[in-house]
Every structure is written in C-alpha cells, then in structure tokens.
Amino acid sequence: MNKINTLFQVEECASKNGEFQYRRDLLTGLQCRIAPDRFHRRIDVPRRPDGSHDEVPCVFCPERVHYDTPVFPDGSRITIGESVTFPNLYPFAREHVVTVITEAHDPAEIAAGQIEDALCGQIAAFSGNDDYVSCNWNYLPSAGASMLHPHMQGIADAAPTFHAGIAIDQSETFCCRTGRMYRACLLEQEMGGSRHLFGDELPFFAHAVPLGEKEVRAYLPVRCIDELEPWCGLLAEGIERVISLYRGAGHYAFNLSLFFDAVGRPDRGFRAFCSLIARINPSAAAMGDSAFMERMHLEPIVMTLPEDLAGFLP
Ligand SMILES: [Zn+2]
Image (tube, rainbow, N blue to C red; front, side):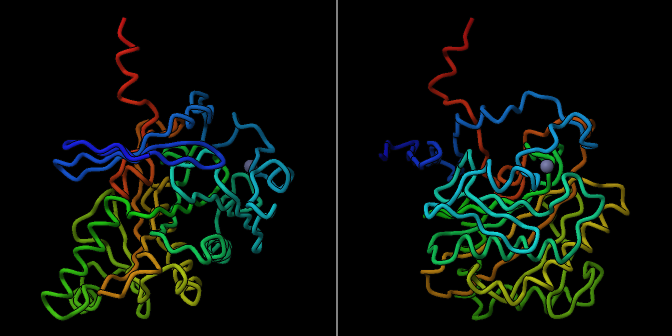
C-alpha cells in the first residue's frame, strides 16, 4: 500500500518475517525506514565486546546456526567455507539476508579467505535478484551490531538507498556531462597520490571527503553484484588490510558497505564501490544505535512510528 500526499511518502513492505515502511520526505528527498519488529532483538541487554556477557553458543555459533536460523523458501541455507547465509529474522529491506562469517564466536582475527567466502555467500543469495543490492558489515556492537558473532548483511530493494541513489544518479550525470566514467577519472587523479593506500588492479584510497573516521574506499570495475565474484579475492584481501590499518590505529569497530547498481538497468557509467569507516565510541561495551544504514547509506532505521509518539506523552 502506498500513501502519498504532497509532503511525505509512506510505502509499506511486508515479508514472511515482518513488516516495515519506507518513508520519504518529499521536500528534501531524505529517506528513512521504520521497522517496529526490530525492538524484539533484545537490544536493551548490555553487551560487552569481549563476549563475556553473551549467550554462547549464540544463534550464529556452529552448534545452532544450521538449526535455529531462518531458511530460504526452498528450506535451505547457503554454506560457503565457514560462512552460512540465511534470511534476516528482522528484515528492513524487501530482501534482507545475513551471512555469518566465521565459526568462531569472537575471533581475534578474521582472514581474507573467510571474508571472501562470506562475500560469495552474499552473491549466491542475490543470484537472479534484479533490485538494488548492497552488502554490509557492522563489526562489533559499538558499530551497531546486535550480535557480537561476525556477520554481514545484504539488502535489496526496488529503489536504491539514499546514498546509493545519489552515487548512481550523479555517476550517470557525470558520465553524460564529461563523456568519461567517474571511476576512471578518480583513479587517474588519486593513483600514486597521498590518499592511495595500496592496490593497483583494485586500488584502495583514503576517501578525500570522509563520511566517517578514516574512511577507505575501493572502486570496483563492475556495476552489479552478479559481476563481483572474480573480484572477491582481491576485495577481501584489501578489506583485511584496512581492518589491520584500523587496528594499528586503535580502532576495532567498523562499518562496511558495498554499493551496487540494479542488474536490470542499462550501464550508464556507475561502478560499484566498497566503503569502510572506523567507529569510535566512548563506551565500547554499549551497542551503538547507528549502523551501516545510518552511517553508510544515510538512511536511518527507526523503530517507532511517528504516529505513535503522542501515545508516549505523560
Ligand atoms: Zn556465536
């Protein structure tokens, strides 16, 4: 059901696992999503990054992940290496999957090979999906993860998130105006410069206008998730290096998003990119209330319907 007036747009989306809304402020174009079911994640329970207050084995641990998590409509979960991919129990996207990355509940290190397998799990989950896809990772509760056990989240919707929409639209406008792809111009300008961190075939750059602390971006030579697989190895190695860079600088928590165009659209010059930001929190023991949607996609997930707020008045 779509409710449209001249000022705000509300669109309901229901899935097997729950309901949520897309909302858009038609004055500014800013978007959010409202997912009341996400209150049920027990996010009021204090969590410590050392795992000492966590229930172990948690539902993402190997003893439970193959039995106690949701399954795809055909009854399956996707297993690649140690990674296990399945539908999110509390979705806020038309298609919303979780990929548990490691068997270990709280590993000291996460290897490139484990990240690569998890990315391949996400690719498999979105095989045949024509929507706008992103792959995302909130690492540690202080970066907004409700589960300590390392996991990625993939989302797909008929419309792009706020940041993805701007990046795709403006990349196409740039290409139209200059006759060149933005990615080509960026590489030409940044390769070998002070912001070029490493990588040649798949370079990683400190982003010139960071969205968050120590933002690092990698611009891929592909547009959609169905073209990602040959690049997963290099991308995962780069992500592992950025995580090492963050740890060397004293940051453990981070957010990551990998933005794609929709498979069904024509190629008008956008290329996928992966962005990471380090998270700094006064209390590492607390769960942050901003995660990849708020920090990377610039599209907040909230749990309370504005129409219910008056009910909280004393
Ligand atoms: Zn676990």
